[in-house]
Image 1: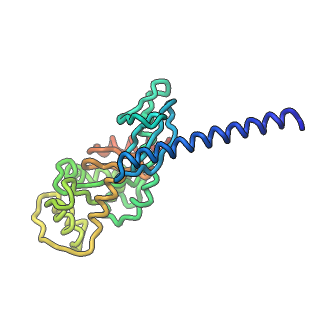
Image 2: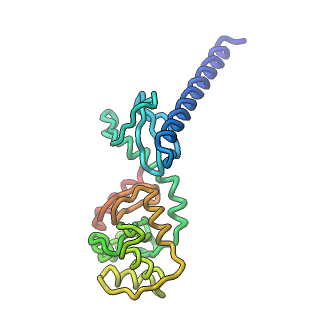
Image 3: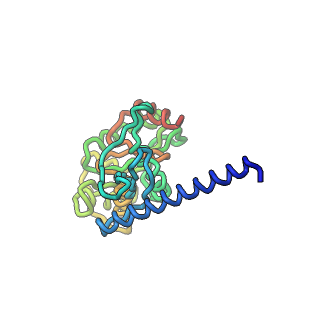
Length: 242
């Protein structure tokens, strides 16, 4: 056997052993986390870019676990040697992309550009002040080629007044008009029908929405809070180049 082929096979075997060891340790950490928190099983556990740490992903939330499965670390990791890259946000964004199919499957209430340059999903609460500000500037978003697909996210939960208003909006004959009127403070006649508001809320929680408005790009980037149309358009252009 040629020496170079022997060396190549040896290196391949070493790589496979290392991968198996890593995979085995990830499984051990996942088992330990599940044992410690029986109601929350991580979706995945894998090596992080930081030596000695594994990342455990729950939905789109990322925590870190030491490789001996003893300590949990919550927080953001910044790589100072790589342009201050937010390693945690990279992992979260990667996880959110897995949920984008589920997000895109949701029936939404749409506004903005008819022939969009960018399409975003906005999780909105009818009674949220900055949600109303964003909605009242919809013509400006449209002028920058932005289409907004609204998913209803009553931030105080499924027993709140905002939830009831959201259901009434959804069950209206003209949802776009009803949503606009509700955001402008109009009293909504109580209505009920089969509706996806609870599913919108659950999907929002899965992708990491904690407040409204929350802007989700087609690539899974989550931007919490209101952004003026020009600033949002610039941000979307930057993200599209990545």
